[in-house]
Length: 272
Length: 86
Image (cartoon, rainbow over all chains, first blue to last red; front, side):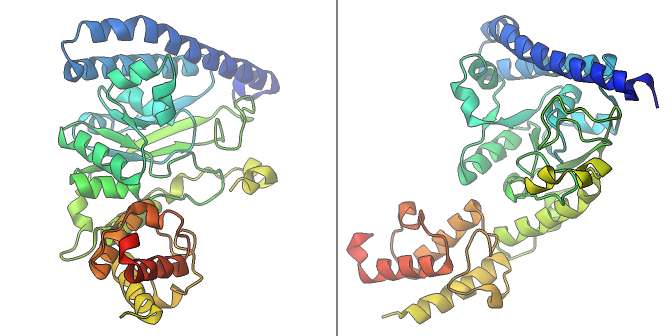
């Protein structure tokens, strides 16, 4: 119990969360108009721009993570950090909160991400996502091909097999896309568990509904596993993808946020 | 000439083989996405197999509105009886 867990502390965390949201928006706007275009301008082509822009993304997200910590909004720890920076891996994580991607990108010098197709129509963000060579979440098959191509080039790629944030207190629902990508690319899978002690920026919670206590994030990078372990001779790819997805489902099952709050709040359960 | 019965039986075999489904789950009214947990990537595999079965070119649009097993049987039957329409 710290001062940040008191009533006044909670008010401070509401203010801090709002502040970080505003700074995040402003930061995206400013960087899109300054640092990113400069980096792109001084790169000969898209392939040389990509690592520079991604590294800039890492530093920016690192700053946001540290800012959230300085402001007392959260605490965090990470196990197995060095494993995150081996290239060519499919990083598969559970997705409890809105800031999971901020955390993971902040730990990885280079990583390709899948982002909403709509961002390519956003006047400010379309250029950064293009220059960073991020992948648009197009429909099933095309997306898997794009992702497999990225891994084939030796890039690491981050995916959340749930496709959206988990619902607190509910079992995880994994889609099979991540498994299909791993099988198509024959890339090693790096499973990353994200534990968060309190529902903060989770699905069904508006940003200002900060938890009673300051949340602690624990990020655990698992051991890499080859997808070949899930393939059997003469078997349809769809069956291997099902087996691998079942593995993810079991592997990540203990990351579900269960607190009294999500039992007491029927609207969150109804969102399921 | 293949009857609807033949088409359904073949489809059931395909679904069991491709997606590890229990034959008992596969009824005409079963919804592919909700009841049988088939996703868009599976649908592509299934269409490929149906292409082999019918010997017809299949336009993805022909399966766009397919929701249940019955819809698939209907679509395959339509392909087999009106080849020019494909």
